[in-house]
Length: 222
Image (cartoon, rainbow, N blue to C red; front, side, top):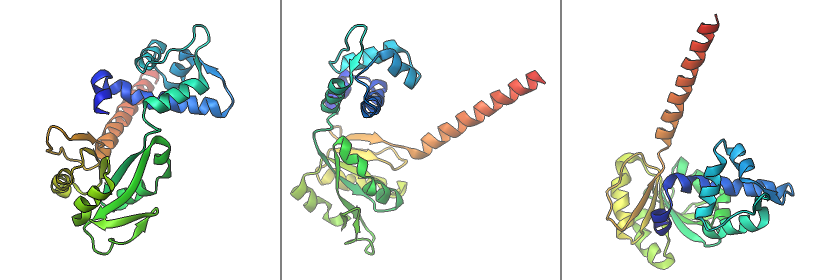
């Protein structure tokens, strides 16, 4: 991920899975080819952007035909690393951590949740989605045994930095952070922040803005 991000912008990286999902959908209904214009129309973006994004991955469609579904789908799976399993620990066996542990579709994209960790003695030893909950104090020892590629952090904000320090000390170099806080980590540790509250607030403001514009249009018509 670190190598790819140096060559490809974050907006492009965010769009690539959308292209893959379209290819999967078209494959399921028996379509053999799809044009960049059709993909762009489905996503509501410019078709030139689609061609540029996909070309960056090293794949090009055929003139006047488009992208061959089966071949381009296989290319995306290889490029996005779906065929390379990435083992992950979930740190925090609360509602969000449990939901992520039970989400089976992660396996389709190469993510394997192998264990959960928590500091609640009532949760330690339980199995969630066939994954065992361990004590957070066992993180370092289990990391040495399993060698996980990633830690998924789902603890409250007030505990996140201390837990992140434990993750780093255990030797894990990638953190998918769901806690609403900016973590302080060494330069060689990759952190991707997934702020659900920020996403909701943004959506809420957009919704309010759309309602205001709609009200203005209604007043104008009246």
